[in-house]
Image (cartoon, one colour):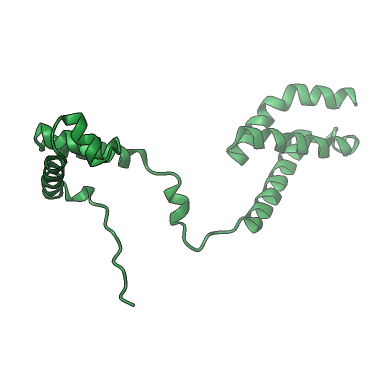
Length: 169
């Protein structure tokens, strides 16, 4: 490797690296871009070393980034329905809002109704298991569960997950 090219790389890499980052917006891509531009520059070093090699490297980086961008643009495909992609990354604020709403709604229930809802629907126990846990009959569990759901629907209708209606065949 030419001594002058080595000195150029050592002295100008930090500034060129910043430029590469600003072009790509990503540290790893910026490193790749700078490496690629320096490799191209090295091939033509004898011709450009007496001029403005930094400007040459910047121009190479710009053209290389545009080339990468064009290739990515044509290889990426948009989905017809972007909803599944959005569903895979739910908004954390929605989950927090749901927890706060649910906690407020559960506070509107009697202690027994709340226990039945939690044991039945969050702990996924059967009605017999809930009855054994609470020391009451299965009928009492059913009654408290029914009353609790009626109350929850009234105080927090936003918690209801709509079920699509079946079409008549």
